[in-house]
Amino acid sequence: MEFKRVVVTGLGALTPIGNTVPEYWDSLINGVSGAAFIKSFDVEKFKTKFACEVKNFDAEGFLGRKEARKLDPFVQYALFSTEEAVKDAGLDFEKLDTSRIGVIWGSGIGGLKTFLDEVVNFAKGDGTPKFNPFFIPKMIADIAPGHISIKYGLRGPNFTTVSACASSNNSLIDAFNYLRLGKANMFITGGSEAIINEAGIGGFNAMHALSTRNDDPATASRPFDLDRDGFVAGEGAGTIILEELEHALKRGAKIYAEMVGGGMSADAYHMTAPHPEGLGASLVMKAALEDAGLVPADIDYVNVHGTSTPIGDPQEVKAITDAFGDHIYNINISSTKSMTGHLLGAAGAVEAIASILALKHDIIPPTINHFTDDPAFDPKINFTFNKAQKRVVNIAQSNGFGFGGHNASVIFKKYQQ
Image (cartoon, rainbow, N blue to C red; front, side):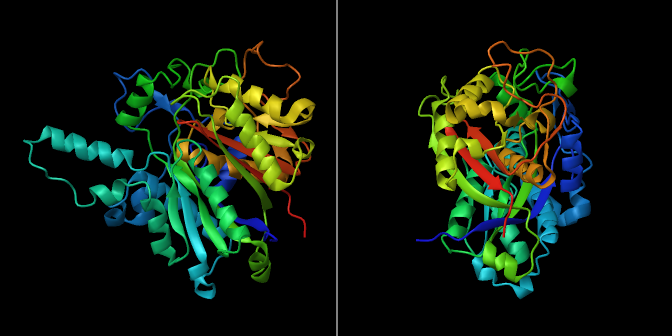
């Protein structure tokens, strides 16, 4: 069977460092940190008092007060980034077969804010179950693609992928596979997350997963730095329009890049810790390369998972070393989480967008906040520390790893007719 080719025709982003794709990209290449003290709730008694929050987002201005109240922030974010992507792709759904356009969306947690608010309100009462009728439909993780399909009248495949921090990489891979098998013409895909609240920050603090660098939030996310002390929570959404090539050409779409492969694997090791030798991570990168019909020497840039945790970063470096061999010295590696923080289920989507734009502009976004070399890492590896680097980028790979040992990796290349 001959697979159909799949291309990227639209992008949308709502991130801690920019509320549109151009703003996001400008902040990335200029090394802007999105971390600051949390404004959305009182952090006085919390170990971590900062995060990478979305800034200047007006849900009521975007959706209207009545509609905004019906939607958890993770859905609001999804609709916002998707509107940008739809406009960017020049989509007129009245002229398209909407039965062959689907939505596959990733979210690691879903409506955590809604769940927190409703349970707290119940706990403060007299035991009478006075829950908001929108409680369940606001909270469930699958509701974001549901709302996207309703807004645009899309009747193709519609579901959510939930694999913790690999969720939106998995959504991209699922959409890619449906398209190349000819099961649909187009997908709106990506992911969103909104966990910067008392439950999210408190829960990750209890796991000792978050940085506690309260004296200097802006530099707290330090992937591959000797003094890294945990990840910085982020929030937002990323939307990618994936489209079967002939369909895109027929409607005269602009094409950002071609998606050529995706790999998935499991660590089969621990509930939250990655495999100490990076076996699952190495396996998933090799699987993505094989799926794309590529060899390690074809890759120019890897947007790594790179969360800035003491145990996570070394395992990923081991995995990349195993997967790429000596070619590791010829590629650029960077962690854009040093700027955006960790968007959990949305991370894969916003990092895929960074990878696609690296292809388009031939610029590698940096890994900022590097101060001290870690002697555990080979100094010949190019982590793109602190400053963006110009180079020809023909093929880029982006990794996502999640609690539970879920691994997913995607590969994009410059489009050629």
